[in-house]
Amino acid sequence: EHQFLKGQEEMFQNATAATLKQMITTHIEQTREHITNLDQVFSIMGQQPERVMCDGAKGIVSEGQRGMRDTQSSSSVCDVAIAGAADRVEHYEIAAYRGLITGAKLMGQNEVVGLLQQNLQQEEQTAALIEKNLPMLLKTAMQAKGMARGVSGS
Image 1 (tube, rainbow, N blue to C red):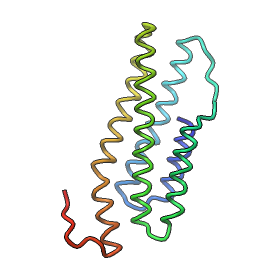
Image 2: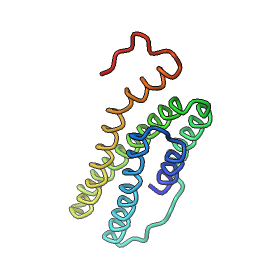
Image 3: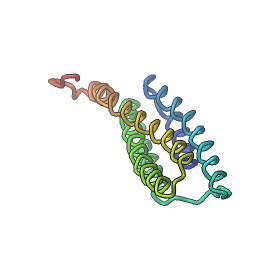
């Protein structure tokens, strides 16, 4: 979550579409809540949280950074790259939370399950919101590049 929070802050700085900036702002706030929930999970489990570099998260963030660099000449295309990167982050987190929830259920840790399910629900909602708005962002980018002839909105 910490790695993705840093990536989201960078995405916010590079995003131009108001809807995208608002989605990122909302999810930054949610990610801070996720970190708090995870701290509670560690406390319930009698463990001390420790930041460990996640290679998967590092790769996804790095890929998003490269996408922003490669598209910086067109703000609307960069917005599409940011939305795509954010969607990949959400699906990575969804998979991770689903696995953690399964483990917590098997251990009978109902309070932990509840905290993890809160995080999972927000990740799923964010992914759905990104996916709902991605066609509009793509259409805007295509129009900016003169490629939108014959493209119908959904």
